[in-house]
Image (tube, rainbow, N blue to C red; front, side, top):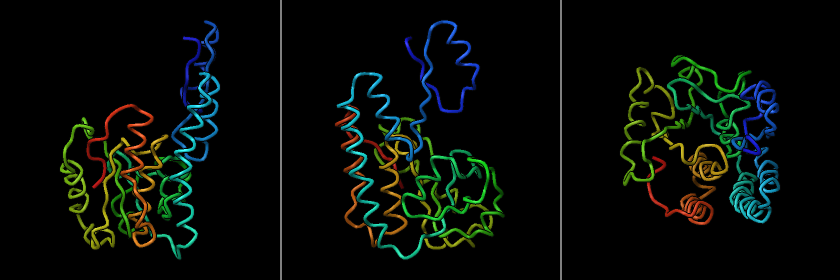
Length: 232
């Protein structure tokens, strides 16, 4: 290849040393952090001589982002949110895509005080924090071919059945949501953020249409038909 794209911090500097000796350029782009996504898409568009397409994707992203920003100007408070990544009891702290999604959707991440992006916590820690909303990221096999939210619903039931978690406000009020990896972080994260905004502030985002945003992303930018089940 002419170039190899890696995350900003991994693999480590050895990748440049090894590939540089072969005349291969390493480009460091994350694409999973919303705060740097626009700049990175522009860079990729320039590298591939696809500035027009990059601009169209950025404009689509802005459309969803601006609707959420407008609504968040009117919120009074942010609910306390426990965001659980793919592994049980692994949450998302500062520097993670999940934390950015929570904050951009108008939530208060209960793991915001950690110093690492993906800390492992205990069930008791979550109980003490008593989140008002729980959001779980899940990877479902062949999510595009799933015709209903059954697999995601089962994951949600497992979370609600954890020992003593019936004392958590989010569980008591039925505000436990599961999001499939197809709309979790990355360029498609604005779809997941839109769902989260509606979960966090249902009265404020009645007109927000995450499904329509997802349909446009798949059919316009990916060239595939919208189908599957991605939230419950």
